[in-house]
Length: 286
Ligand SMILES: [Fe+2]
Image (cartoon, rainbow, N blue to C red; front, side):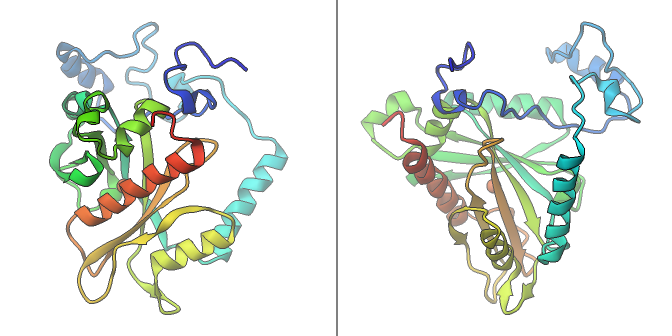
């Protein structure tokens, strides 16, 4: 099958033209007022019928997002079985809500992507980790007035430090820009919080990963980070979903760890994702 027009320069994503991340929904007291604030800053909204300005959100149909898809009885049964499985295997109450959402962009777009995002939502730039060995930096934005990330997940943007077209001088690894060149600028992973604690002598995140592995979910490498007697965090990436192309991350902050990430973990996860892409999908731009 021919890839859709415009996707030939993102070779690995072209094989999955229907796997798309559309966006996030933020609560506002008035869509109309928000629009009047943002339009002078050159943020564009969907104009043609203006159906999405201050409509009650009793039903998603009011947003006119596209065709409705109704699941048949067989699909509903499968969904219910998956929910039951989640409970039966002891995952309920251990895997909580979304902790952060992470996108990857090209090196030259890092600042623009951050500034655009910070223009549109009330987040602030929390800080960045420079992962020199992976030739990338991970930039974290957060909501300033929530005590629990799950109420408004942190938004992370990762980009190369040196763009791919100059990297031949240094020949550093560059999994971040390889990802963008293979899949396009897009969300890379969604991270779920695992509640801190232990079960059967192991940390919850290790337990969750064991259960999911037994159920057929594949992960990239092992859990990174150690939780002993010091506050720290443990994280792991799943393999990318063949349906959404997204990686799922599980993160457990142990003993009240109050930092957001650690440089060592970010470096290990970035390396693991790059390695998987090279070996499993072919490293298109070697
Ligand atoms: Fe992450």
